[in-house]
Image 1 (cartoon, rainbow, N blue to C red):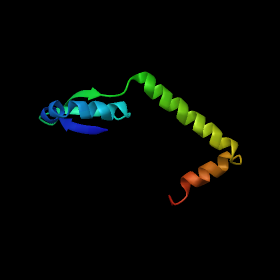
Image 2: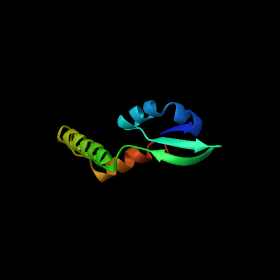
Image 3: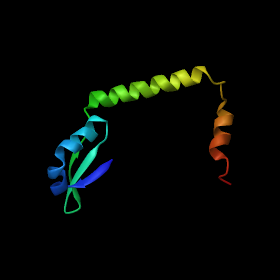
Image 4: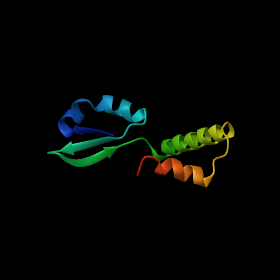
Length: 80
């Protein structure tokens, strides 16, 4: 997420729209306080999520199953 002052956003608006088109979210501030968020449409985010889920499912097809005990051991590794 990118943060930009309102005066700079006004001067670089078309550039910011290009960033949003690529999927980035922009926070516009005035005197250090957020006043607006500009981001891609929700439908595009849904497409990104669906693509990520499809990628995870494809990866799972190529890897061996993992037990719950193994997952917990990996999570806890190095914590003690």
